[in-house]
Length: 348
Image (spheres, helix red, strand yellow):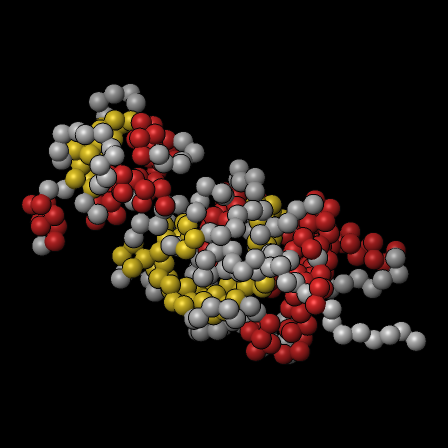
């Protein structure tokens, strides 16, 4: 007779890192939902890029605690869209719908040969993900499934018990596979027509560790509502930049500086450490020299120039005017402090 045993504490996932992004994202299952055109996929892309890039330290004003590999199942997108969003990013591993379905068929045939019944739905996804991380010896920080509808077997009108089972297999995978114990699996999902909640039964909410809703305020203005087992309810105002498709923290309906390096630049402008120049000029010269002087950690001067352009109005709010010089072949820039009169005029 087989001896029945209680759960062994050492089997439990006790070494999970508490947070991936401070007060926003932690290991377990996260669900991101919202109405159509709420930029759910773009939000998932933006958070993926930030986690995959060690040079990015902040996401919507929250510190990124852990960087690393991201696996993105882009099951709603086609080749050109995927290339535009993820091209050149080595730390993000992509699987489109064609490769996902092909891999699932391979695994089904393997199971049949071993006299196992092929897995279906989310159970097949967990089987595939475990094989991927084991075969490639990787420990991803984030796994995005865009969208959950493309991997699950339960339909929109499924019962509580069916959806609980669909999500329980993900919890089981995260607990049993050592390479996934510190991973967050983010499921991009659809909302109901009014956008107030997610599609499906209450069984979905019962199994999700981190529920995130993108609520439309304007075309590019959103409220990110976050409910979590380990954090209080939050409503975070955010704005999407339509040019870069990046999300930024917003405050009182206005965008604020979200890039950590631009913050460093602003501090440098008002510090005594910078070289003395004729007031009210703060700096005049090339982008490369400014990066070096302010000790800014950008990949190159073109990236830095684009960041300056994106944050020009915000720098102006903080009293620094940006002027682009065209007197030489090299791209040059002039930063000038607003005078008391200019500040007064702006306030009026």
